[in-house]
Length: 440
Image (cartoon, rainbow, N blue to C red; front, side, top):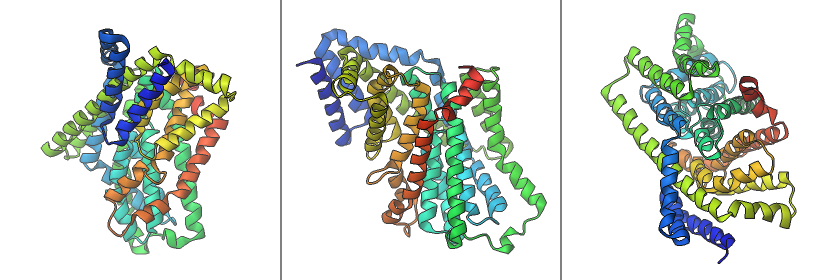
């Protein structure tokens, strides 16, 4: 059997295991380990060992538990509730204002956590009931929460971009900076869509009643200061890093410690909050480390087989496709896989194939990391099995049906596709900020 056929067999077996419900790290790592032993005998055991050593020596990986801990502290201590109260008071007089405020809430939650599931959980438990109680259209608001929560994997500190940096061997700091403008641009596009749609049809997002808007200015300012606390935490973490005063790992530790102190000073750091945050941090960090370890082993076997060179030859020599057509096909494959896999699984399955190919085609890997992230955001919300669709179904009240959820996402998916096209056509949207800070 040729090496190319072995590579196809490995990929097919891995996909079959994933379809049958096996854990992601077990499917990827198990196939890699068996293939290594069958190809190279006992010497193949060096591959997972080398991958493990590579993982343990990657110093920026220490940022992962720090950011996850920071996000859970802010979430479990209910500091996110203050954000929504702030938006409720300040944005209520605008048609569709609470939905616009919810997008702002999601951006701030993203800057606190870096995981889309956290934004989804907070949006579904805090924002959704309030929006429905205020008479907002249920289809629109479910789309708002799904679209807003997807920003968590793009706006720094994105955990997904940390994983991409590990696999693609790119600087995490540059990837984070590359995600800032695209993330804010996409949030602004969501806000513009909500505002225009609610202006055309005010019944979709009615303004708050006059009695709810009669809040003393002192109370408004108090809520504003409480709601902006996450921004203060984010600034305390990112400003020293961007200015070169601290390393990435040191900045993540500052962020985690600042969030912890904020919860203590507000009197919300209970034993239950601390224990839940630590347990969740440990569980998610270990899950990501196992997945990265499996991905590195799988990538090493693929590289040993020469699969990347074979795919490059297939696309460019045999099929005669130009680099942009190959890139578009890659993005379409992410959309397809996103109907049944989460973002981490998609990354670790295809990164051993795509990242070297993207580099060989002459594209910037920082820019491609942002394209990958936006594409997985779209895939998260794409029927029939988009990840966010089922998360919303699990968290939404009974009156919101799966049909409502499916019908809510089309306009937001179109907005995200437009954002993706803009960044593909104008790469500087993603690359300007990292080049400004770090140089070309």
